[in-house]
Structures are given as structure tokens and as C-alpha cells.
Image (cartoon, rainbow, N blue to C red; front, side, top):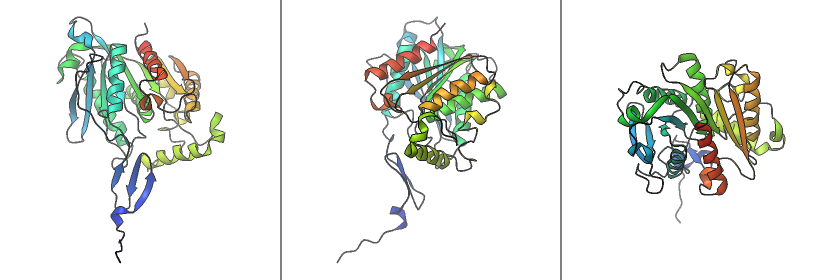
Length: 322
């Protein structure tokens, strides 16, 4: 009779399906966000993309997107959007089909240049590594301020008085912290105008709003955070809970857009973020836009639905607001 002897390599230590599994031998198996597509000239939107290496030693890179207008005009400089992808700090990349397509659509609609950042991910590279990689990527992008950087697309096409940070879920969390870091460390000449945060991943030990009855989602949100950031003090760490950050009122940028979804377990944190900013002494304006009947990052799962297109138009309008 044949018998199968279990080995350490196939024993699961942590099962976060349908996203990833961690085996007892330390191996990480990512289930979601593992597909990738090459940079291209998108025939539908006219958006062109290319990949660049920011730090070969750290495996930090980015995909840059430029809209069709850059090929027809040599005069107009465009806003820059530095974008951070979601995926619980653990999965997805700028090169996955969903993020590539999303940036194509957003860049075309907003008529901006975008740098979509590839930061190192947990658990192999636990937080705060993703924050450090993201900061290095921002510094690289704005190093083109005087037109003398290594990437001609950024030298020629960007108005560095109109820089925006954006992201979804964990990426929105990163964008928030990058804007805080600008306030303390500065970027020289470039001006951070605003933040576009889509379904931001913020949390806290005290439940608010609908979190009271969503026990399973609370458990998941807290588990993901501790998994991605094993050195954290918990759900009231300022990295995940803006209410506990004494520097919140120093956030860089004059405008913030927070997009939330009605069925998202993180929705109330988005609304609470608005309240916190308004009470912090921050002098900018913050707007929350809620889309009904949708859940967390629905625009990645249903990219062609009416509400996904509505979200893209909302972010584009925010960037182009006078």
C-alpha cells in the first residue's frame, strides 16, 4: 500500500486564502495578484507605459504611464500622480493586469503622468520596508524636477508644481504616510497638491460604525496588519491608526479625496479619516465620496462596471480641479 509522507515543505503555517499561503518551511505561495502584463502602447486609450528600475539592489522599480497628449504637444506640462498599489502589503504589483489596466484608464481620463511603484512586499520584507521603498521611489521621481533626471518621460512631461499621491487599500495607507513624510523631510522644489485615497486601509482597536457587527472582518483586518508588520504595537499603531498620530495635522497637500464603498468593512475608517483631518488643525480640504452597493476595491474586480468608471472619473476630476 502506498503511503504519502508529509514533509515540512507542504505543511501550511498560515492560510490567507484566496490571497496567499505561508508554509512551515518559510515558503510563500501567492495565489492572487500573480499575473503580469508587459508595458505597452494601449490601443484603446492611447496611453503608453514603460518599466524603470529605481533601486536594483532592493528590487524597487516602477511602471510609468504617459497619456496620448504627450505625443501631440510639446508645450503642456502635466500633473504627476505617484501611485501605490493595494494588496494588504503582501500581494499584487504595478505589473498585474488589473493595476496596469486601471492606470491606463486613469491616466487617459485625468491626462496625467503616473508612476506606479513596485515596493517590496511582506512577509519576506515586512513593514516598514514598503514605506521606505515608496519614499525612495518618490525621491527618485521628483529628482527630475529640473529636467536632469535619468528618465526623459519625467524630465519632459511633468509639471512638478502639481504632484499627487494616490493608492488603494494598503496603497492608500502608504500614500497617506508619504504625504506625512514630505511634511517632515521635504522634497525641495516640487509641490504636493493632494492625495487620492481609494478604500484606505486604516484601523484601530476601538470599533466604529458598522465595525461593531462585522466581527469576522475585524479579525481579518487586524490579522493582516500584524502579519504584514510583525513589530507593530497593534491596531493603534500610528502606521495603521491615524487617530493616534500626533503629526496628522502636518499632512502635506491642500486637498484630499477619500473614496469609500458602501459595503466595505473599511468604509467607516474613510469617513473617520475626514473627521480626524478636520479636527487636527490641517488647513486643507477633505472630501469623501461614497459609492453605493459596492465592496472593497470593487473597481479591481469589476473594472468595466459603471461604478468603476464613475470612480475613475471622480479621481480624475479631483486631480484636475482648479
